Length: 316
Image 1: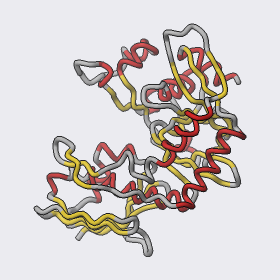
Image 2 (image 1 turned 180 degrees about the horizontal axis):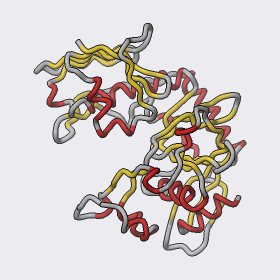
Image 3 (image 1 turned 120 degrees about the vertical axis):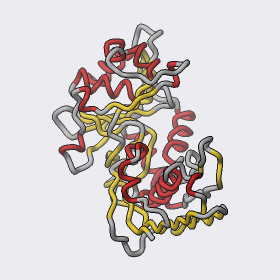
């Protein structure tokens, strides 16, 4: 039996597995998506437990504190399925401690500890804007794709995040043609589906958390829409209804498991239902965090060409 503790940003899950998973989790390509992934060989008392048994029958018993997963190994996608289930359990630990996983990008100022949070749906330009701010204005990358936000003393901080750029070929080609020519893209019939991971260091960009152990405070928030068909940058208060609905969906998607389900096998077969791990007290903490972003930081909607959007954010 392989027994260990898997941790992401201070919170984790005890693993008990009939298959050896420790080295697999550390070397597989999917682990880079888990912010600040650590593995400890000893288990921790009073922490959630995930039991995995490699058997031919499928039997799932999923609860916030203990999951028993019986699955054939071939359905686990080399452990990826188990990793995503573990992260759902870890998210509950995050929210108990007033932290949450957000789909967002964030950069920190070149000389101080103040940060910018970039929000928006997939394809809205969060990654490109973060990349542009880092390349042209010496910002440091704090998070891209996933950001761990912390609510502390009535302020919002970035605690950790995914620390690489996951770039879409079509978006880079349209907005940063000089960079597009330098990247070895994966060949696909549709450039919109071609994405690649790039380390910040390979672009001469500094990662904030490489040299800093403390979180940084968010002082500005933007809802993004990079649009190269526009000639001017438009900045306005974010629409109230759509903003509140979007923030509620974004900040609760990992605790409610609306974006994480058990997928396995070569065709990502849906294997089983993960219930919501949400609780009223988690909702209340998210409500206060959202109110702070909307009312105190006055989240703004920004749209326009990439160059203009990045210049506005960097100079205001």
